[in-house]
Image (cartoon, rainbow, N blue to C red; front, side):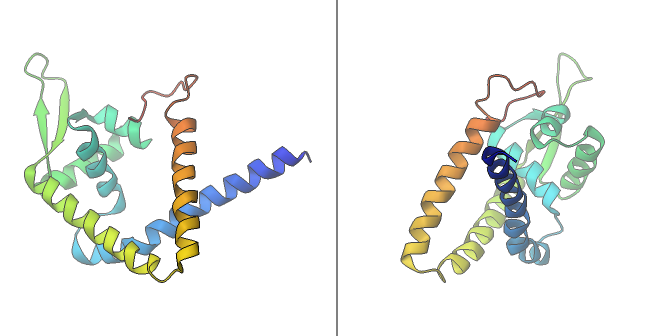
Length: 160
């Protein structure tokens, strides 16, 4: 097996293992403070970052089917965190945007996640913090290059 295949396979394995490690660290504490599940938080985060989006745009950015997005948005509407907006020119077009309560709650949740991560990171020595800071910056840049700036991307949308 060529070396680049082995390297690519190890990168894939590492990337797949990162998400559960990160989400596990904060999911329990978030669940104890809110009724929201991770999917709802992802929707809230996308809307906070991008503003008003259609259901299809949300689904595209999160790579989730529209019926799943609709269920998540319905839950967020019940929590008064987002609202549906109808296009005045074409009532078939439905947009979703974050409410002031949604923005406030999302910022609180984000702050709690940051605080929990800070507590864990402060257990590391200075050298490991430097390594992690550099590695996470490189990882972010490379992933953005792969998934955002790729001109050959034929997906339905581009994440900004």
